[in-house]
Length: 164
Image 1 (tube, helix red, strand yellow):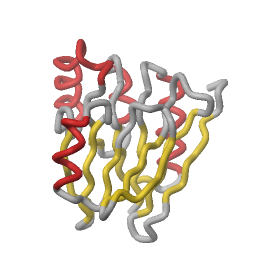
Image 2 (cartoon, helix red, strand yellow):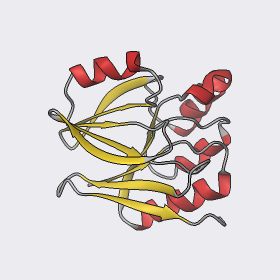
Image 3 (cartoon, helix red, strand yellow):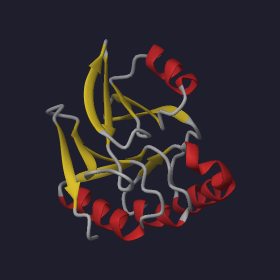
């Protein structure tokens, strides 16, 4: 199974639409959004796939609207951080702006911890936990998302064109 990972969309609707379609065309069966939506309209685009998401530091004012949209689209939202299991693989997600959100997730030692916030793509091992940041679709030198293959454990970063 492949997991699409996206973050820091910051209301970039057409860019987000393009990214979700690209991830789906590359085999993503689930989408994880690591926060910083800004407005809930983006959630409709992301719910083209089964969706897990968290809030980011720029989402504070729209949390009630994001909760409502999550219920409307059947998305799973562990609020500021949490863990879920897909194909017996434990995946944690947090935006990454608060260590108080990250510490308990790292302590639980899931196989993966997905986060955003820095607008920089990363893939590194932190003890037993593999940490992946897909990059961002706003305020970045290069707009990127990530595709995680749970079987091969490979991560592929996909570039989203700036003109989209």
